[in-house]
Amino acid sequence: MAQVVDTTDFYVGLKFRWQEAIWEIVEFDHHKMGRGGAVVRTKLRNVETGSAVENSFKPGEKFERVIYDEKPAQFSYKDGNDYVFMDLATYDQLTVTPEALGDATKYLVDEMEIKIEVFEGKIMGIELPKSVVLKVTDTPPSFKGDTVSGGGKPAVLETGITVTVPVFVEPGEHVVVDTRTGLYLERAKNK
Image (cartoon, rainbow, N blue to C red; front, side, top):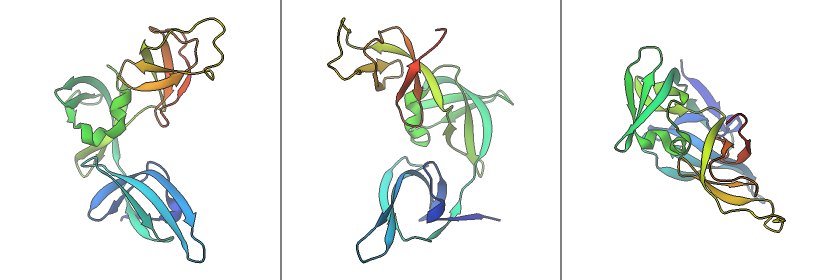
């Protein structure tokens, strides 16, 4: 039996069936318009194609919620554009397209353990840990007394993403990044 959700149940990451496709909520906002009724504005990502759309829904509209089965896996390597994972239960290699991964590709490092999301036998994406430790590959040097810059500077991390880090962080150091927001959390301990 399908689980039904309506617009009051929306949250970032919710997956539901709409227009004969499976969509994931990237952003949403309940918006009250002057004399008219309220609407729920959303930014959605098609989990199969990776395309994004913006759409408004009426309050109370109902949708079929999509619940994935999860398999523990480990990121092995990148093969051309695709990403190869090892199923930790069967040791099979699973190939996932960048479209199915979406922004998760920004945080993947060798041997990272994740959960592969499967729906009706098809790989739909992955669930990352809430935070990851990444190495800083490039950032401008800091200098003594540098407090004018607002306490932050851009840093390029080993996966190619750029995050704002405190001025004291140097290349070669490891930092903890929140995979949900893409924000620097702290310097990694014991690295």
